[in-house]
Image 1 (tube, rainbow, N blue to C red):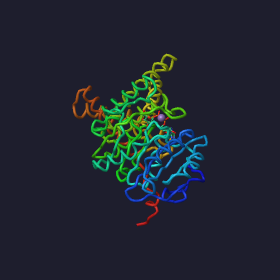
Image 2 (image 1 turned 180 degrees about the vertical axis):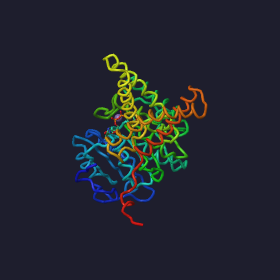
Image 3 (image 1 turned 45 degrees about the vertical axis):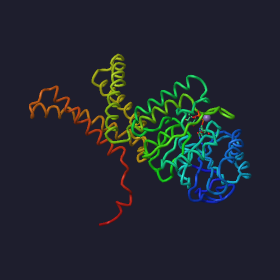
Image 4 (image 1 turned 90 degrees about the horizontal axis):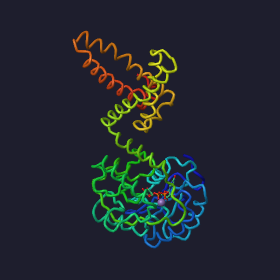
Length: 395
Ligand code: GDD
Ligand code: MN
């Protein structure tokens, strides 16, 4: 990520703050992601100034990916404020909204981190209440919820967005019943979390649902909720669209398959889905007059590529950087084809030596090569390589 000149390395660096000093003990860092929100900044900061304590107990960190003059507007507005305000402008908007929040959380020094939107859909007067509820109840995470009595989604434009939000909530809660217990609104983007609970290295959010990411990966044992009315946008337009929906589904898949057994099931399901492109390619090639044997081999590659794309996007998303993509494709394809080659002698072994029937022998060979292929793919394609220095040490 490249940063611009207004952004020193650490939040504790006083130069990052436009006004005031760094945070104090028992403090709160407000992390506010912004993308072209120039029209909302003045009102947002004014309303925060009405409710936040003055002095260094509170600090505001904007993580900005704007292409308009939002950072300049923040800097100007910050001069009149009684608490420290910083803006981190990112040149490349890596990870979008989720990436911006993780970046802010990584730099936050407060005992509590409050994440909120800049467009005033999240009422600023609730910030002290979120932290207060956490302190009172001993909860590690406090969620501002639209689904509690007293809360509502008044500002969610259109009945289809309400239906989508409801379906997304059910889906998330169905997939993560334990991690989301006590959270009535896992889609909320407004919450407070204790800083020590957050392990930023484990975070890899995909899209907008950063609370879901934190609740599933950091697993706070106690959760509290505060009702809130989702307001209309003060100014400007929402940045989320249909693509966000697809990202959300991918995010759920990535989170759900983050344990080894779940990853193995995912690997199997993806393998099964590969039959579709495989058979389709076989049909195309044989209809084009290709002999069925070379067609089988070529069609198998279509299935392999399909599987590779899904495995990369859903299962090992966070483990791709250790090897170049061409290296990964090559290894993946080699293992997938070796799987076919290995299966035949294995079936012969089960039938010839162990006296098994052909069908159970084939099923056993399928399961055996599947487990071997999963283990080999994880170890040979997606495992981090040992550090170079290990090789140069002489014994
Ligand atoms: N830094 C950064 N980078 N900020 C971004 C980006 C980005 O790529 N995209 C959006 N933002 C900021 C916006 O400027 C705003 O402050 C906040 O993130 C929310 O973006 P909106 O575009 O207003 O999102 P929304 O209103 O559709 O969604 C909000 O409400 C949902 C509940 O319905 C978000 O809070 C979601 O997290 C929440 O689930
Ligand atoms: Mn919004």
